[in-house]
Structures are given as C-alpha cells and as structure tokens.
Image 1 (cartoon, helix red, strand yellow):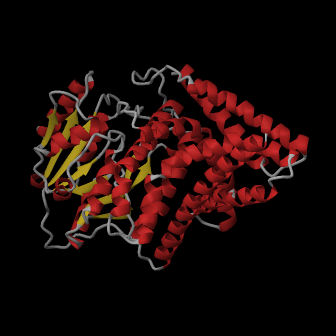
Image 2 (tube, helix red, strand yellow):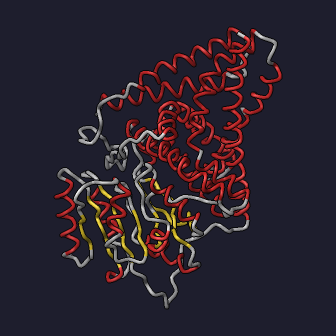
Image 3 (cartoon, one colour):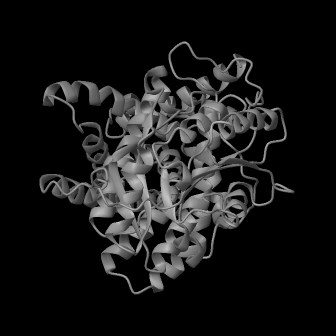
Length: 495
C-alpha cells in the first residue's frame, strides 16, 4: 500500500507540475500582450500608399466534399477588392461527390465575369490538404498565396488589409489574421469555442508575436510568401497539422510570421459535438506529431532561452490533455489518501500549490474575454459562467484528446479527418440530413459517460470525509464529462 500511494502521488504531482509550468508560459504571454496593448503596439490593418505596386496573389481553396459551403467561399474570394489582373483563385478540389459539379458551375460563373479562377483536380488525393496545397503551388502564378478553408467567408478588403504588410520586411514569410465567428450565438458550444479561440488570437498569438517568439500560421485566414514556403521545404503531409509544421520549419530558417488581429477572417464554428471532436482530434494529434518531429531541432537552434521555452510548451501544449487525464483520474484516490494516511502531508501540500496552474489559465482566458468589453463588473458577470462552462467542456474532452495525443507521440498514423461543415449561420440552422455527419458513436463516448459518474463519486467522498479541497475540480470534471457524453449522443440521435 505504501508504494502504491507513493506512485499515485508522484504521478499526480508530476502531471500537475507540467500543467503548472505550461500555465506559467501562458501567463508570461499575458504579460507581453498587456504590455504591448499599453504601448499601442498591436499591429493594425495595412495601409496602401498611392504608389503601391499590387503584387500577384494566388488564393488557394483546399476543398474536399464541401457541398453546403463551397459556393459562398468561391463567391467571397472572387469578389476581393484587388486588381483582377493580379488575382488568381485556385479551387483545389479533391471531392468525390456532387461537390465537383457545384464547383464547376460556380467557377464557370466567375470566369464569365472575368475572374481568373480555376478548378484543379489531382490524379489522386495523396497527402490530403498538404498535398493539395503543394500541388496547387507548383502551378500558382502568385508571389503571395492566401489560403482559406471551406468554412471561411473572407471580406472584400482582406487582401488590401493584409498583403501590404509584407513590404515592411523581406523576412516576413506569413501574414496571419484573426478568425471571426459568423455563428457564435448559435448555441452554448459555439459561444464556448469562440471564447477559447478569441483568447488564442487576442492573447496568445499577440503575446508570441510581440515577444519575438515562434507562433503559427493557423491553417487558414492568412497569406504566405511563396518563396518562404519553398525555402522551408514546402507543404508536408507527415503530420495532421501541416500548418504548424511548416510554420516552425520556416521560422527555424529565419522567416518571420507577422500577426495582425485588426484584420478579421469570418468563419463558421463547428456546431455539433462530433464535429468539434474531429477538429480537436486533428489539432491535438497533429501538434504531438509536430513536437516529435521538430522539438529537437528547436532545442538545438541558436535561439534565445525564452524563445526555446515558449516554443517547447507551444509544441507540447497538446500533452496537457494527458496530464489532465492523469490528475483527474488520480484525484479521487488522492482524496482518499489525504484522509486515511498521515505519511504524505508535505507532498500533498506541494501538489495543492501546483493546482494554481488552473488559476493561471483562468487569468489567461480573462484577458482574452475582456477585450473591448465595457464595465468591469458586467464583464465579470459574463465571464464567470462562461469560464466555468469552458473549463468543464475542456476537461470533458480531455480523454478524447489525450488518446489523440498519445497516438501522435507513439507515431500511430491515421487519415486526415475533415471537420464537417453545416452552413449554420444563425439560430435557425440545423445539421439534420447533412450527408457528411457521421452517425456512428465512438466507444470512447461510453467511457466519458462512466467518468462523469466516477467524478460524481468524488463529490460524494468530499462530503464523506468533510474535505472539500478538490470539490471544485470534481464538480467541473463530473459536469464536463456529462456534457460531452450528452451532446455526443444527443447530436448524433438528431442528425
């Protein structure tokens, strides 16, 4: 029993320590971001001078079976306020359903209106999105390449607000913009996703950019210098996050990513839990794969210690989910050990200190949430329930994401699973009848349901032992797993 207790406490404290240090890195980004805001140093939209020479821009639209949203995407980019003789649109179409004809008809419509838009079909869908981007680049006319996923609806001024930033410095390889959300108010799940993404784009991306640290192209809503892509070795399909991979390879070669949150690229958020899970799976597993591939190179590169520190935890951020699962699952035995043994009080006290990591994450999200909001107490009133629900769902997704991270770390390869798009832009939207919605429930969902009961048991133990130190944690966990289980089943039943 002694050695089992020791093993539990070592694993528990070790996982909490990683979360704590990761949270410190995020807290440092908050400091950098706030300092930049005070100095009014956050990048604005580009301004075009009278003698500006418009460069040739290729807009790439990687598409695979996007029947519900592809027309609005092509319409949006074809209407860009950019000289027509300097604009090329590539619809990189890997579809194998009626989307092919829908694209052909829409492309013909814009060609007849004088837009240089072409539907590009590869002989085989090799390399998924990365393969499509690389294939299109081989025939791209543009000096710069803008990329948009199918769920985006960029504004007419997007290129004018972003491309001129490249003139500041020949080593700017990417201009990344901020994502907007056209269906943020659709449901609690879309509001929580917007909450989390806004913090990433307002605080994290700004913090990395202003601190001179490595940041990432977000896969869409940005513009690349073609020479940068070529110099970094091109798009690779050996990870599920080809965007993170190329971003780091480019920055290791001396290129910069310029981030401008003032330019917004609106997009549709996944509305169904299964769609959220597929997106989270790809992001977390791909980040783990990229960390295995590139972290050794980052650590060996001639970079500052602070940049290596941030890059390390940036690449390893998905590993947080493994640590969350360890701390969550072991927190119930820890509660038991706290109340039946007097041998581990010092170690217990240390582990409770490391729980502060979750407090740091709350500070991190607070700074993303309060951006441009009026009134402190009104902001607090709005923030507290949303933060509570965000943490709950975040914890509830931890097992699903931890499995993805583990597969990435051990090198298990899986196909690129696209996130289904529903064309939901208001509260009346629905995914019922959507042909891309997978109606099969993953067996992991049953485990998520069981874990909600497991942590409800932890709540019961708190009252049994009259020890409420871990009660908030167990409350978040029990609710989070219950919500993820409920929404997965409910959304699939009503598909």
